[in-house]
Length: 216
Image 1: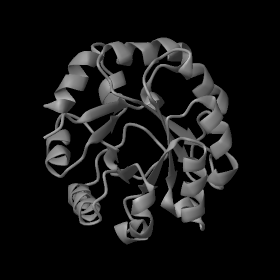
Image 2: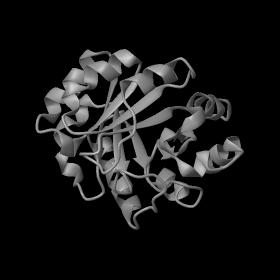
Image 3: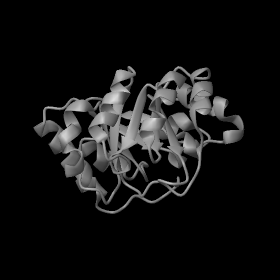
Image 4: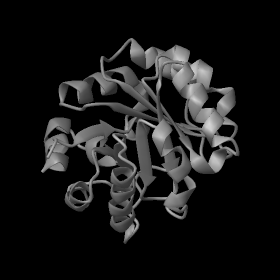
């Protein structure tokens, strides 16, 4: 079994020293930096945009994993791609032309990801599995950090892994929401290959200890 990757979520970092926070988790052994872009419409919160992604690219060598929790994501793909995003993940629920949107991301030379909310059936993304590099399963309702893992969502992670296997997909299976040392083992057993963790990592002084705890 491959070692699970850990993607600390910048949403939980100290934004008064965001560049140092990014560098800190890089030194602590993180594999990616997860960036939640929120617009106050798709989710009830507002975070940051293209300029923050561009600035972070100057602070860290970590791949920038950009998660667009926004409406009309097609209007912003080019900007985030040019800003240095390595992966752009969009919500299946946010686009009526998901196939076209994923094509757009790939045309900009960026890895394409698709995300589903806890209440969204996996069947919604099955038609586009051949186009993605990453499938993100939300295990909390998106919009805020520090939420508790929704009971039973580990079964959806297992189902997602089975779906990817059935389609002979090499896409990463990423999980975001309530990920900590207690929930990580069942997610890894279920087939998750990337764990996104915000407060569990950034809320502790020794980030390396927390990253190792997620890997088990």
